[in-house]
Amino acid sequence: MYNRTYTGKIQLAVLDTAGTFCDGPQDLRNRWSEDDLRGCKAPVVPFYEAFEKFGITLSWESIRKPMGHYKPTHLRMLLALPECQEQWMGKYGRKPNEEDFEKILAEFRPLMTKYIVDPDLAKPIKGAVECIRKLKEAEIKVGCDTGYYASDSAALNKKLADEYDMHFDVTTNSEIVQGRPSPFMVFDCMAKANVHNVNAVVKIDDTAGGMKCGNNAGCWTIGLYATGSNNYDMLAAAKPDFLVPSVEYVPDIIFGEIEPRLRRGIRPGQGIIETI
Image 1 (cartoon, rainbow, N blue to C red):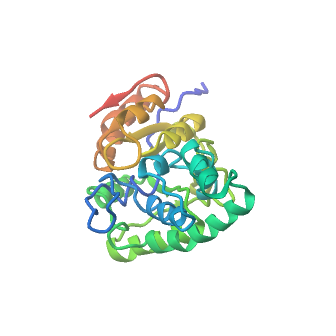
Image 2: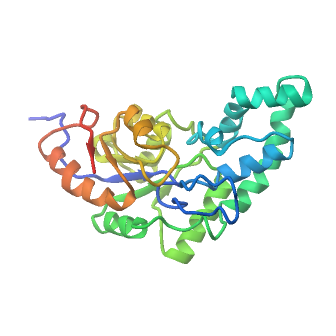
């Protein structure tokens, strides 16, 4: 008899980039005095420096608020922040407009290209290399989604492959695929990996937007609360299936928690929040 309930194994893991498998927390105040000691610095620094060129100082906390979105969208959300608009009014006597957006974006682009492969930032988080190796050994395809420009993401992934032997089976392009919190980057990775059942997919991310992306897709979600932009409370509010400190714990969650549930016919998104 046909059974709609999927009871197989995980086939695809879709990971975010900075704060998830690379660019983790470290003390870089010797380079950036504003450093908040959290992960996912590679997008923060170029936004900070780009705004500084226009006489606007945004805190790292403010810059992190829209984290997880495609970077032009992230910039628009920063320009809409009250703290940004107040400074812009004080300096220019008006609110920022579309021309201002384009000018800041033009400053941001080369800075992002520079920092995404910065030696201090473009290195794996503890346990990331082992995580990807274990998933591949279990014949789980590994996907990468991100809010970065495609060329920047490709440069980072090449560096990770060349220097750390980290390889992704599929990647998605946020320039042409609608990003978080929509589900479409997960679906794009599924299509490229030829994975048909969303119950066989895990979305792994350090942002609430990433958890909403996975939840909207209907797949399993694992939030990483200690290595990226969003803290435990922010991730918990997005209602992931599991909350763990870092990518180091992902294989244990997949093999020890998710797959046993799948064998019992349990689907993702049923209010199970397990934490370590």
